[in-house]
Amino acid sequence: MKINTHTHLFTLRNVLSREAVRAIGNRLRHKNMPEYLVEGIENFIYDLSNKPRHLTEDQLLEELVRAILNTDVFQQFAQNRLHEIPVLNAINIDGGHLSKAAFKQVLNSVSAWGEANDSAESTLFDVYETLRIALMPGSTAIADHLLEHLDADDALVGLMMDIRGDTETERDRQRFHSQRDDLMEASLQRPGRVFPFFAINPKRPDHFSLLKDAIENKGFVGVKLYPSLGYKVDSDEMMNVYAYCEENDLPITMHCNHGGFYVEEAFIDYCNPVHWEPILEKHPNLKVCFAHFDGHETFSHADGLNDGTWGRKILDLMENEEFSGVYADLSYHTDMMGKPGLEEHYLQTLNDLLSRPVVKSHILFGTDSWLLRLNMSDDLFWSYFREKLSGDQFQQIASENPKAFLGIDPMKKNFERYVRFHKQNRKNVGAHPNTWLQEQADTEFKVKRDHPNWTLQKYPALVVLAAMGSQMYSKQKEQAFSRKAFITMQELRFWNFKFVDEPAFTQECKKLSLDLVNQCKKAGKLEGEWTINEARQKFETIIRNGETRFLDLSFQIDGMYSFDYSSID
Ligand SMILES: [Zn+2]
Image 1 (cartoon, rainbow, N blue to C red):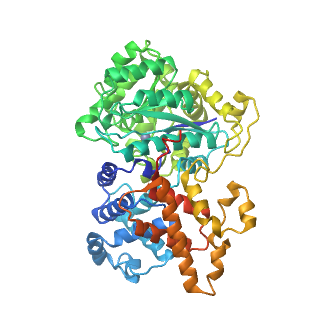
Image 2: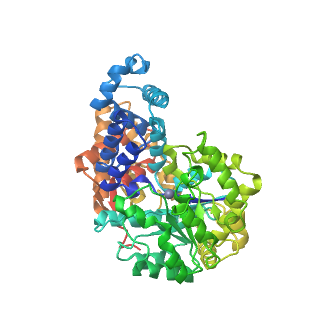
Image 3: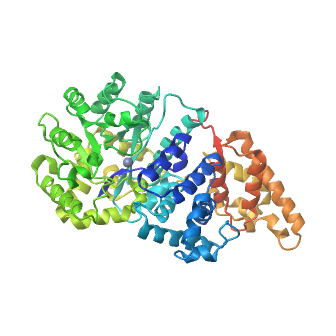
């Protein structure tokens, strides 16, 4: 079992606050993404946060490219480059009707031009790919995307993120809860392959009781910290968290570099490993992973491990005989790849460290999953380290060390709980467990869990069935609930009008879309700036597409509405 110790499985929608939209734009500018692209990307994301919705890959492509074409800054750029990017000549640049092929061609040509001429680290294509993953309908889909290129026994650590500020809207509170629930769902959908870490942010008043609940009742196995979001790691509240972690054998992963998301520049130092010495003195058995090892620079720059650097501090803590649980991961180490000077130094340093007795068993492999996609795919990141390290070295950082850090081998309380949790749910999982969990649980699992977006426990599926029920033929009504997800519009009664009586067809679509809006209203609230009429029109468009499945409708409802489940659980 190889383990990617650093992935994020939350969807963009689960973290998409206004603050986050701004941070994304800044991040792109930071990566030297040129203004002729950033403005359109920002507009696209703003629009998405104002009118949250599910997009298919084709719709994402079209809407993203259209948003870019429509900015003045892109139009100006295009004027000057017409002879260099021929596709811009061929299309009507004010975004008239374009085919899917044309959108794809614009995406590819602009990306290729940018790659050759801009100094940006990422192309428009990278942005598209990042959004394609980030906009998947849930954590299980993202986990599947990351597991797809791995072996059947391999696993991921899914790290939550809690970006709560000093205050929080009710909607954002719900988002945080659904981020947690969605991660727990992914863990039950893919037994033995997703290890959830709960995010602590002491600004959340009930963080401690939520932590206890996640660990004791929801199968979570560790804790994620992100101090540069604005909190110190040595407060009394945090000390309570560490005592609980030590008592329950919970490993902690803490964001530790000078970049990423930070609310104010002054908060960056909250991630400084120097703050951990006194904490570890009080809790010598605590396991903490300094994620990113403060960035690739630690290894690739000649002075990366000099006294006073974070990298040096991490190494010192790791080698300190008093502490046994200090780890660091290699996630998002991309910028040295293929760069003469940097790359050689990086690999040399990593090799040296992997031959040092204590250090070699405390370095962890991790990718950063879809956040990484602005630079490269998860797959490629795995291949790079597999290729550059020896087989033994890779086995060490991607299998042995993660197992020790997590508490899998030797097995600790947290993973005993994890196994128990999955045993309790053995009759309702989404896939066969991997070999490791199968052996540990030593019991039979039943694969019969509902699709995470099509379940009787969630409103969207119920709403679809309530609104479309009258349109089903008796045979369809008799189908099992899970099969109903795949019923398409063209298989329903109203489709009979489609080719013989267009006005009657339109009438039916209008009526059904109104039914949907009314059913949604009973249990949910429209998100963002959607008006009832716009929502109805949106549904009508979707219903008019014969290939739309009930499941697709549920994606859309889930995207456009928020439902309060707190009264249920
Ligand atoms: Zn990360």
